[in-house]
Image 1 (cartoon, rainbow, N blue to C red):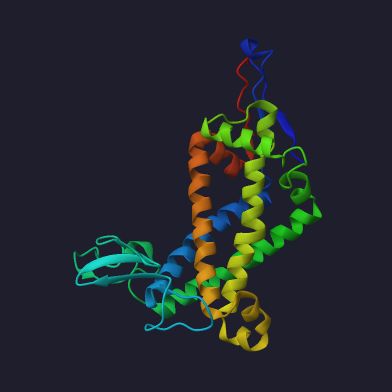
Image 2 (cartoon, one colour):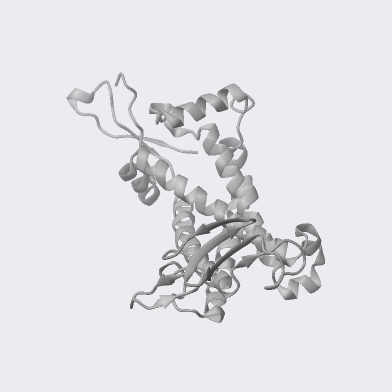
Length: 283
C-alpha cells in the first residue's frame, strides 16, 4: 500500500500542496535495476549466440540447406535481412559492417551490439545462461510476492469497467494525444499499462524462460513435454527470439513514455521510491 507524503506547503501553495507519494518499495526498485543490467547482458549475449547461426526455423530440425523463415547474412559484400520471401538490404548495419578498427566484417549483428564484442560463442553462452538464472529466479520471486500481497490482482488486473472497449479506446486516444493522468489518477496504472505489464509478466517473460529451457539438450531428454509444447527445438528457438523482440519493443515504448511523462520525476521515483504527482490544470 502506498503512503502519501505531503511536503510542507509554502504560503502561496497553502491550498495546493505538492503531493509526493511513496510509489515504489525498495524491493521493487532493486528488482527493476537488477533487471535493467540483467536484460542488457542477456540481450547482447543472445545476439552473439545468434551470430553463430543467423537463421530461424520452424519445427524439430534446422540446418543451412533447410528453409529459414528469417535470415541475416551477406551476399557479394552486401548485407541483407530476409523474412520469408521479403529481403531488405542492411549493408553497414546487419550482415556486413565495419568494426572499430575499420575492418569489414560479415556477421549478422555488429560488435557494438554483442557480448562479447568479438566472436566467442562459448563465452556468450556463459554470460547468457548465468544471467538467465538471475532473471528467472527474480521474476519467479516477484510473481510469488505479487500474488501474496495482492499486487497482481489489486493493481494490475483491469476492472470490468476498465476492460470495456469504450474505456480502452479512450485510453488509446489519451495516449496518442499525450494526455497523461494528473493528480490522484496518476497514482494508479491506466488500463493500457495494466494490459502491457500483464503481457510482459505472464506471456513474454515466462515464454522466454520456457523456450530457453526447451533448447537445453539435458532438459530435452528429461522433460520432453517442453518439446511437444513448442513443436521442437527450432520452433522454440524462433519463439525465444520473438519473445525477446517483444521485450525489446516493450523497453523502447517504456523509455519513450518515461521521457514524455517527465524523465526526472519518473527516474527519481525508481531510485528513491518517491513520486511527485503531476498537478491538475486548476491547481
